[in-house]
Image (cartoon, rainbow over all chains, first blue to last red; front, side, top):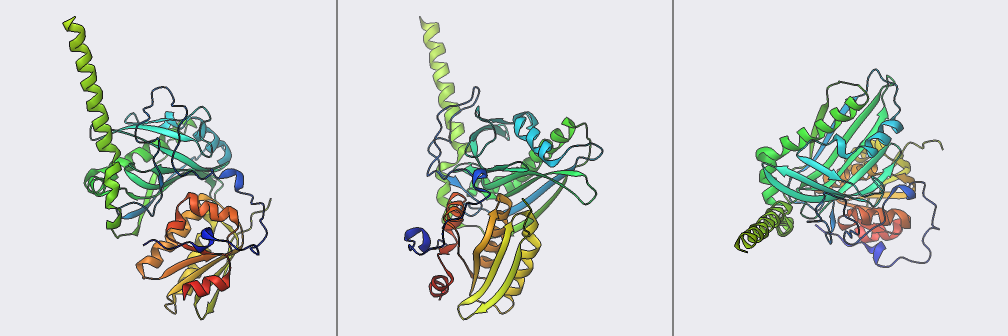
Length: 260
Length: 116
């Protein structure tokens, strides 16, 4: 289902005068494709450069909204402070099998974060781009080939009791049929474990040990068969190929050295 | 600056139900949007139009709420169209690729005729 967008094709001169939006500084600029100039040490620029971003509407599988929360109870921390620390220490809060490599600019609108993950023992090199960041939240969007197609929003707010709550809200669907099968068998649980770990780590930074809650809602149960072509960009398959080619080169080099 | 919580009014026009949105579309807007959307759906219109003329703030959580409305519209085989977006918000619809799925019109007249 792809509708035309008449406004973007030809807007009239008499449209309303442009207003200065308060959120303008928080949103990234639009890019046709991801362009990477500097790759952080340790990261692999695989499945990132040249990829288009894909949102919750472009993927293949069922669309899920999952909301994870932890109450930062018993400590004096504002939502702004919690999100500031979260941005600064984002890679540290990840589990060992899901490494994030931010650019020098860190978590800021338009910046790309590289990901080196391991799913079921298989490497997956991919990334995300920060499309929105303000003092109390930031959102990353996935590129083609990433296991998910959608957004993750990391935020904090004050609840009715005055306690700061840290939250991750994911709105995403599997990018292609292989990922959809993977998520249904085991991937969804793995993903839930990752975000639970992140919230636990953030809470532990503030000396809090509270349970992480998770709510999930299937927003759209339909599979989008028109997106089956996304298989071509599957980052898992391409990462495997990348790793095998790398191993082959290493073996050839080793044999050459032993032969001389 | 004071937060302007979202207010939504529902109007019925010959071409569909219109949701006049006023204020900020962020996490606090969920209840107002859901209630208004349910009200708009009551007469089973073919098209629901979102009027953004009086919207002055959208964050990424707000975009997620609009995706939720779109999913509901698709499930009911309804069209969801938008109008009155400033250039900035047209750009946000492009960044998030919402514009692949939601027709965006400059004003109500063109939206209603486009939806017909």
